[in-house]
Length: 394
Image (cartoon, rainbow, N blue to C red; front, side, top):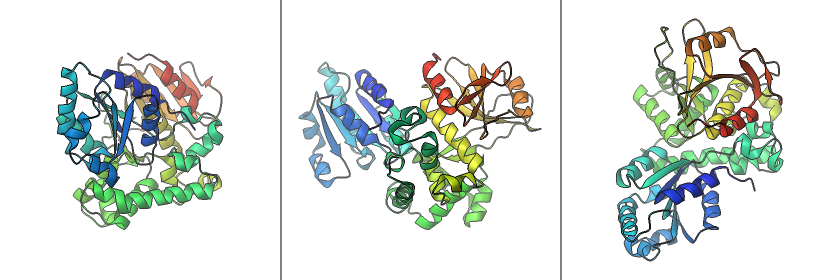
């Protein structure tokens, strides 16, 4: 079993606040992580997709009152939004009794609705964590039989990454996509034809890392722009798509304003495009964009709390693939190259002159870190991820 880096952070949060919301897409490992916490705590686990467990909460005040002082884990809690006012009352009751921390761990798959429900009701009582698919630091170079390229090809969902072979991994991801479209997504909003949304999702995969052009997507899909925008919002809410915003500071140049859009898990990108093995990927037009999205998602997964990411593009080709800004107001400029002989473009140097980042890197698929110039380093993804976890940005 691959150890999740978030485990220690989750246990620490449960020592600090009465309720922790653990967000993440389905099948990412939230339940496994929660049960790992439960093994070390006096805990009770309820799966709200189970009729038997939902029946236990027919009278939630009575049930939860019987478990005061224990950690209660509520899985798929978005299925029972009426629980949040009850949880607030139980937390306040426990506070009056002198117990303040670690009472409730809430697991959910949709971010915006769950954040709104819990934020409005549990304000001042809740903390949020997001569990991403496995990242490069968790897997390691050859961790659990998964090489760097395997993580990129298959993505980080546990069942896909650890499948016995490429056909089984691809089949799992295809089934995952089908289940989301036909069963899960209808739970979170208006009914959308599964085939329509699948086509839309595949369009995003074909345009991985491209500028968001709602009008073009709408025309290609045969819907209006408002409908296409709602599809983007839904997939973003489900933590399946990322909108990377553009840098908006005033640098005296005309900047691109539209965000870039990425399907967050590289394995889902490849499944949507029917890319089932490394040979096919290496000859596919999505190769460079897939690598870029994979690097960006891994860096977000390991970045410290409070870090913000943008891309920078100005007129004349001035561009930085990823700008990471940190709580201490420092900034790193990151160029991403799918080449063993990486060289940043002139536009990268020009952009760095505009923005004056503290550090400059070119992430490439090699294994060594070395200087490209006085202030730019070529670095493997795992090396930069390690730097992000080791630095103090407070």
